[in-house]
Image (cartoon, rainbow over all chains, first blue to last red; front, side, top):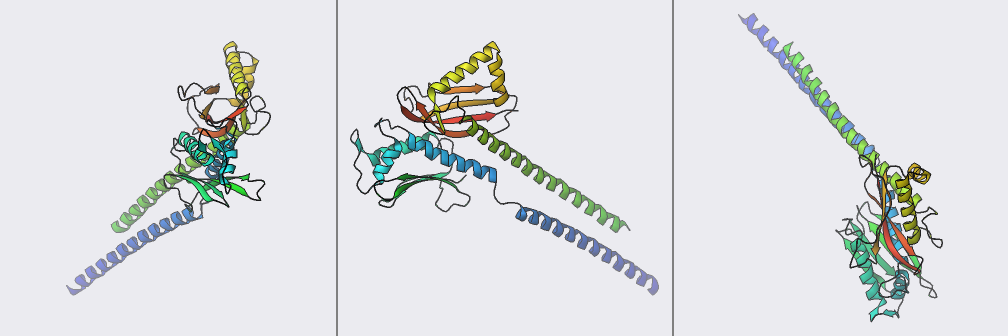
Length: 174
Length: 157
């Protein structure tokens, strides 16, 4: 009687060991799978270079085209010329009773509304000169100065005869 | 014995599910990479077009002459209707795509849709890229004034 009981106990113990072994194998396989997944994700290049190229091209071309445009209120002046006037210590040009700073503010907002805002692009546009600091800044959909993954295009316009230049920056966060 | 078979069975199922999920993720990322690659090629393509001597202005780069743009658009349209060599020449370059140039500043407030130029319109079956937009300067040689425009390019399969 006691030998039959002992055999049953042994049989149960062997079965339990097998079950534990099975569970251990499953856990090991799951952990290995997770590790492979994590390693493949971490080692893959973090940046999408094609997209970065496209956005930086868009930003640079945007600035280039903007600065060459003739202004509606001031047909003989380009936006670039009015930006350089506004960036000086004492802006002097006026068109239809507006100062150069008022006109560039209005024009840049109109251009950005007809393009990047319309396309729902996250961006930050800024004009900066050594005399007036950041004198115009337009932001759409919370694209900050230090937002990660931002691609920036920039252009420089000379403030001749002053020995400095005004910087146009367009950062695209998408 | 039964337990062992059960454990092996469960393990095989887990491995099988893992392989399916992994291949699904890899497939999606591969498709995204392909699309991004096609889009960047479309940007290059759009840039190449913006340097064509048929449409660029003589004084600046990345600038299109409105008069040339209108002339080339009309010329391509006519050659398409008459099915002459010129259409085949541009078809070799532009294939199944649509290229439209739209002014964004200054815009005619009374009729904003009036001034847009369709340079090429040969839509294919399925869109293979997103719409690629390239900001350009639009030069009017009659008034010697520059405007800003967007060249939109869509490539089809």
